[in-house]
Amino acid sequence: MSVAPKRPKGPPLNAMRAFEAAARHVSFVAAAEELNVTPGAISQHVKTLEDWSGVALFRRNAQGVDLTTQGRALVAEFTVAFDRLADATRALHALKPEPVFHIAALPAIAQLWLPKRLSRIRARFPNISFSVTATETQPSLARELFDLAIFFDVPDGSPEQIVIATDEIAPVCAPDFARRSDGFEGVTLLHDQSWIDDWATWSDAVGVRVSDPASGPQFSLYSLAVEEAKAGAGVLMGHLCLVQEALAAKSLVRIDDLSCDTGRSLVMAVPPQTRQRHATMDIVSLLLQ
Image 1 (cartoon, helix red, strand yellow):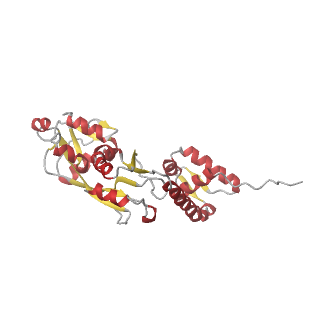
Image 2: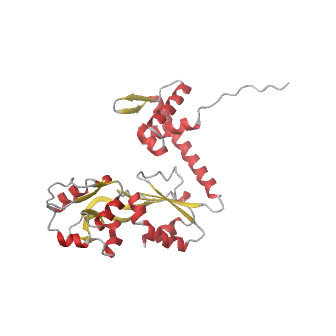
């Protein structure tokens, strides 16, 4: 009679993934954003791992979490393991007969900068299907199945980051609104919620007084604020690389020639060369044109 003894079980993979992300960020909140779950779910997964191992991996406190000595000792091995798993997943994904080319982009970039360029790329690569995910959080191309990410960021000089343009801002509005306005006193200022400091940044940089740079309606999408500016609802602080088509079409005009650099740039991030698709750099070249 054969014997089939119970074999020891390891901890759940999701619990290990949650620990690795939380340990890498030293934050349950940042790990939750990366894995698209709640901080409570990360906490529960980590507790599962702690119960299985019998040791505390994090210290919880009012300011957040800190790794214990035991937790810190595991970070490097867990990170290498999940990097290798990401490599294997990407290799498996590349075996699909018609793999999709996935692009992640900030919503404003996906709506205002990417469409015309993507149309040109589709014409050049008719056999590739392109998918665009608009997200506020820049993904990790080492871990997630994105082939390209386009965001505003501070350039780090790495070969995986290609600078498209500096992020310059300047006031823009509808042509008729520009003819009616005289300076910024009493003028409705339009804001994107994510860039609520734009007016104060510009005012301080160029030395033009704006009585209350935080006043005026706010929009959750920059593209909505752009449409309101086109409709004559007020003056928007234009990110020039995003409103260049509207400026060229004269649906928006600049009020003056004063602009300032936010310190960020519009950049494309690509995976390390060994993880890139065959057409990746050709697609990047077309986007840069």
